[in-house]
Image (cartoon, rainbow, N blue to C red; front, side, top):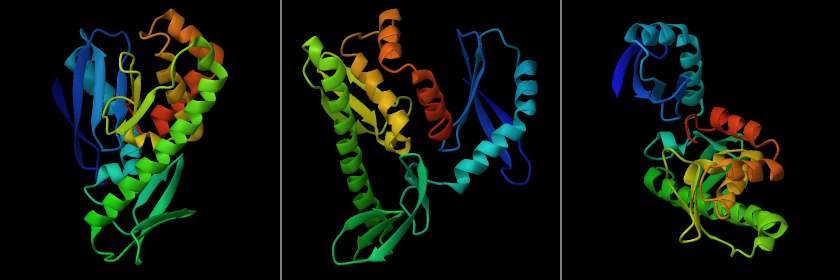
Length: 242
């Protein structure tokens, strides 16, 4: 993997773009919420072409970096801070730390984390992370149950186990052998349409383990707009995750 230095001006300064040559036909430029920039290009693309391409895309890269810096979420920082913003089900919400006798989280237009010491950012982050995983898991299971009852139950398969963990390159993963579906911890940032797409995608693997024509035909039959959902998911939530 090569690294290209790109000068973006006063706001974002100098950044580094990770360039990977692959056996692909199209060029893919992606900006992640952690501000990492990656460019995937066909193997035979010249360095001069890459430099010219990145120069032309400076404005877009600048706008993406600015957007992500303005809405810094929990995956951008070591610990939550009072007044930071987190994206939940497609909406940006401000996070506030408030003194309280119980360590709880309240989600009413804004996120309020109650704890004894409002300066204990590590504790606030632990409280929030536990809450985040709990409510996201409840939503995933609820949506999975709908798909299971309406689509998958008739195929004689069991309802899968569900897990949540941090993943850098995938929204979800289905272990067909263990009948376990694991969701990216940050999927809960996406709007419900995106969440439903990932759920159906992973549950479809219970019937079709590989991404073959049967897999995509099944997915399209039961969710005709899955491509649109995926596009919005990749652009508006965490760019680059598949």
